[in-house]
Image (cartoon, rainbow, N blue to C red; front, top):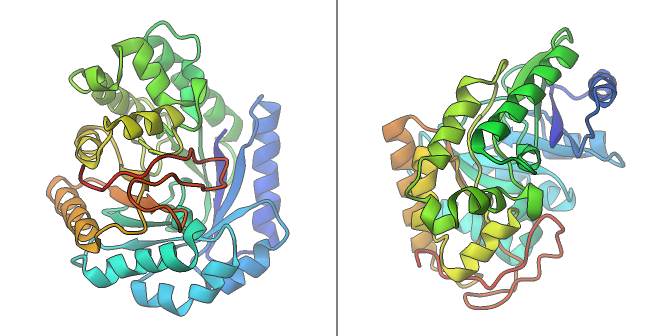
Length: 334
């Protein structure tokens, strides 16, 4: 189980007790909880105080650029605090890009906890795009692990459906159960990597791009989830899927390829490396394109660019983050 995420307008102890009950139900069903999360649309400082000393990832969800600037000290001070900037109804500008580049200069680890979003959907347990709409909780898995040993895509699908049905059986009668975000969220290498499974089924990443592998996967996770909520799509986290990061270094996962996959199967640009010396105009072009595509097709898309604060284009990163694989940074657009 990748995460159990609680949503509360005002964080309080009852929310934590409810989360513990959910975890006990899942544990009894044989699941291991990787992360615990809470989303509350309150001031960052307030949410940070509430979660202080707890093994919980907090997020305040959607903030305007002005609100982020006003709460910047609290954002920097809370190591795991997340937020996102929704530009669906606002044309991206260089000022919006400057916010990201300020993070790169002043507190690079926070780039992991921030994203731009377009046509976002609420109640996803996946950060930083998680957004509050109503109280309750949702869950998300790391379903790439279920592909281990599978001889076909259909066998993997059957395992995912079985897991969803088990979760609904375990949690279905609990108050506030919003549903399962059936997004495919890769992490690490081997069984945790989607690209590892793609290689076994399609030969390699480049060959897979002209198959229906990704479309079939997205269609399945959207249509066969018994209690869907949130994004329910296919994630391509460049630095979190270690096999994908290797393809990135080879030049096989440039932004054009990322966007191609996002438009027919994915959810946008996720944990994508950015050099400290990247041209802000290029970032702006990418954000404008994401917004245009999102509005044209009514599709949730996001952009999360990651920097270690030191590596420029052509240099090696040192993220010191177990969730991210270090790479040699490439220029965006190439």
